[in-house]
Image (cartoon, rainbow, N blue to C red; front, side, top):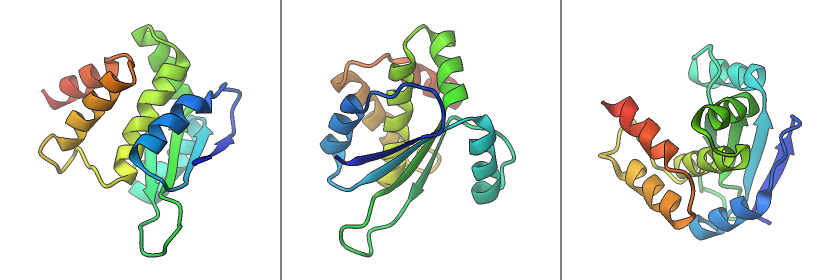
Length: 144
C-alpha cells in the first residue's frame, strides 16, 4: 500500500482508486489526511501564511534520503462535500480529483509557476481515470 490514510472525518474514502493513481505516478509512500475546514485552515495559516480554509494542501518530503515518503496530502472534507454537491458528482470523485492535484504538487508540479504542464498532466490523468472534467473547467476559469 502506497497510501497511509488518516481520516479525521466521517467521509468514506475508497482508497482502491487512489492507490492505482498513486502507483501510476510513483513508488513512494504518501500520507493522505482528510480533515475539516478548521484543520486545513490552521495548516494553511501555519505553513503558507494564509489564514483561510482551502481544498487541498501538499507537503513534499523531498528525496534526499532513500525510501522516504513522497510527502503528505491534506484534503478538506468540507470542500469535497461542497464541490461534489455543487458540481453534480460524487464525493469520491471530488476527493480523487483533489488527490491528483495534491499528488502532482508532491511530484514537483506547480501551476502557479509552470507553463501549463501541471494543468495538462491533470487533464491527462482525469481522462485516463475517467473522472469528471470539473477540475479542468475550474482551472480554466481561474486562469481567465
